[in-house]
Length: 309
Image 1 (cartoon, rainbow, N blue to C red):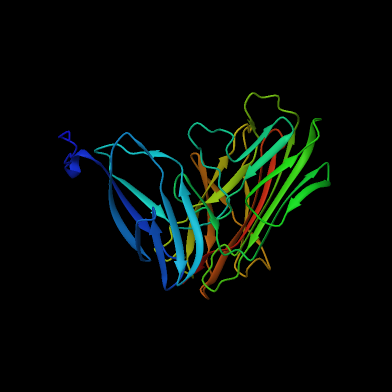
Image 2 (cartoon, one colour; image 1 turned 120 degrees about the vertical axis):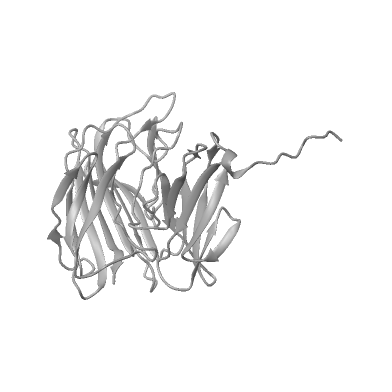
């Protein structure tokens, strides 16, 4: 047998990642990369071979119930540059992270086939995309010039056959779950865009936008009530968008029964939504709309985005 097949590394020769895993309730467990399972919240100190793409995963369960699944796009870590990565931290909502080498991964058209891969429960972690495993109901439907083309009784991956002529489209998707510890119990989104035949050879991206919320929550996805609070708001694109104007954000403290404007403050490449949390606890919900200069729009709602304590 050949020799020299075993190599020994010191920590300093590897890339260091501290992974923090939040919970959304009590009695939950989390599993990382199908190898480590522990009660939530928990923290891992990880070491990776540097300068190599890595894909990671996280799954949350309560008892025997499998609740949600989160994945990460391939990431490369560098030696000597420690990273802190957060998993399962809200707000959970639609996301379109950049996937290396696949600019049309989430929404595409090739010829007269449109394909969508929609992940409606993505945590706030960079490059993460996620979905509910315990959704009670869901739907995905596509409309052309206001008329329905087809629909599916789930949220997630779907394909539609379209006429070759350019037209205006509206894509609607929604997911609902009602577990006692669930967050983002109802997530819905409507996108409008124009599209025509794509000759190829490769698929072209369809111009969808996701409005993302990244508040500083504790490791149980809570924020303090009775206080002012700033929520970072940013946009993710599937590709092909023109410049997007400032989004419009609304907030609700009664699960969407009433809404009020959330003023935005510019903060470089994103905005800060100014909120004032009520002192009675409960949940915070968000509505957001945005449009680019070509008229492509998004209108999304997230009910019970996070808890107030």
